[in-house]
Image 1 (tube, one colour):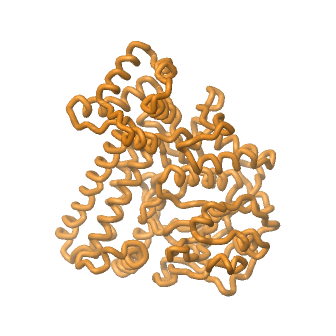
Image 2: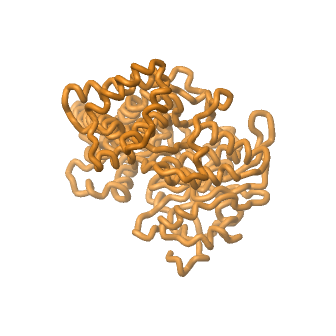
Image 3: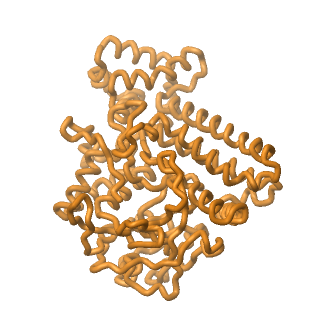
Length: 494
């Protein structure tokens, strides 16, 4: 589609139909009472090269809300399994989501369009198939925050009010549908499901699909499946390092929530940290801290081990050789994560030297931030401002429990940091001044759910697109929570 054909439906493909039938179910979204467009991501449409006209039209809104016959479409729900908090579930799947298909962007890439909250599917397992307006707002805002930070992520193209109410926590609340886009919705759990359903043939079909659509650079290699696995490992290691460097906690890194194209997917109880604590957990269901901030790299590795178990027959017919072939990519995962995280932390601190003094300083930086209960984002933003020549040292010193200790730390920092213009510019690009603060996201949800007021939602969704610069009108969005605003637990929202 081009912009001259702005009233045509751009969703004209369904690439998943090339997969074996056992890996998905044909099912259309369920009609809703009175759909209306709550938000449309115009900037994202521009990136894709799509006009907004069809998405704002009655035909477009009805199509995205489930209110048409889909005679020329082929919507599906995708099947997948997964380890949830370490426990294997053989059948999960899209219990409240429908894959409408794909559109082609201006640079010839295919982008998935999936509805979440669009009704029951064969994988619903007793759920109502719907989503609350609050759950959709959370995913919209956090995905925009991730995109603004330059972290690969699924996106929200639109938010649609259903006009219906859904029951959550013993009360009726407004329903909504999220229109989500992604490079792919294939997960680790997709391969676990394919292996359980069809064995090697299912895994091979899914791997060939990934190679054809997302990893074509390995297609001609004799060891293409091992090369695919290694490429997945590298992308995941890089993604997790990016999360951790901005204080992001995914919260539910089950194998069914791990994308195989290296994008952040399924936000649920995710959160950005306020004060830094390495073992910080927000998710109300993560009682053992399995998915704490400092465990995310380990869990990424564990999830990739589960993926390797399905890939082994493709690596080699000899099981011992296959296991050996899986180890090298896993080792690459470790080295990639360590390098990305260490280099990212050095960039956040403006340190480029590799001396023993600099290395010791780097290693002790985060423990100091934790000991002093510093706000993660404010601390690194303040350091960046100091490096830029702003008069922020006294304000930062006031955050230390012992002012003299703070002076010594800053003196040590000045001694090892690089004060070149290029390093300071890189430092700013590593240290956002604005994140999706939990208390502000929760306030936006409360306003929308209880008062039908989307003012704060729209302010946040716009401001989070440019997290390294903040306008005077949005200075209040930088604020850390007051004691009574602190969010201690987050919930998946399903």
